[in-house]
Amino acid sequence: MGEIVTAAMTVIGDEILSGRTRDSNIGHLADRMTAVGIDLREVRIVPDEQAAIVEAVNVLRGRCTYLFTTGGIGPTHDDITADAISAAFGVPCEYDDQALRLLGEYYASRGIEFSEARRRMARMPRGAAHIHNPVSVAPGFSIGNVFVMAGVPSVFQAMLENVIPTLRTGAKLLSVSVPSPLPEGTIGGPLGEIQKAHPDTIIGSYPRYIEGKFWTELVIRSRSEEALQAAKSSVEEMIERLLQRN
Image (tube, rainbow, N blue to C red; front, side):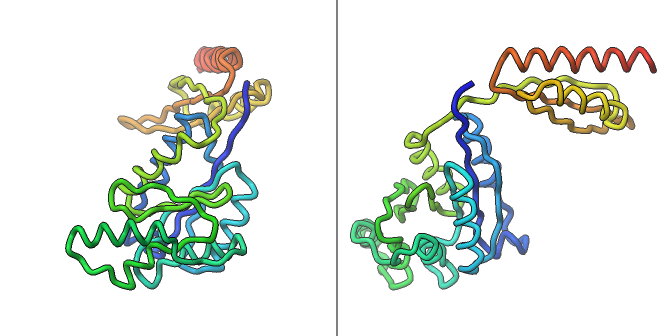
């Protein structure tokens, strides 16, 4: 069924945890990873604290094929992601000459002072590679299997599109939905038995409530079309059997 390639995500920022900013990057990354055959396995949201970032990065980069981080690479004092990633890899965080040049030219062309705060956006771990930023020039960076990108959704999305062609991808998950007029409480037991009988599938149960009645959407996923269809048939037979009893 092909290689399984996995990813994790670390979302960095007090503003996410406080509710001041609502994250949209998680859903976008999940969609894009699924589309190219990479399983997004875990997401952590951490505050602007170096120890928390280092811990999350070191755990997740060791657990998954790729780790993506968003947030904390701007010009302000609490943008500490570059320092934290450097600490996680045990390398210095320093000004990157190419990033300084890009940013200097960008601000000069707009007649804006290239202040010390703006220069902070050119700092990255020694040995890191640039992630091109076509929106606002300030680059993200990658080191090892970690890709460090901006938290602003438009910038994150643009950076991600530049990263995806460089990734190793795996077999894509196929999926099919089966609507059930029966609630989860009725189908839960038999559905569990079907899952055991079809280990090459992932069966999800999603309750719905419409017009005063519960029903359930069953979603079956697999990397094998044969396994997918076999599980789908079992689910449909289960629903039919239970409906005949009621």
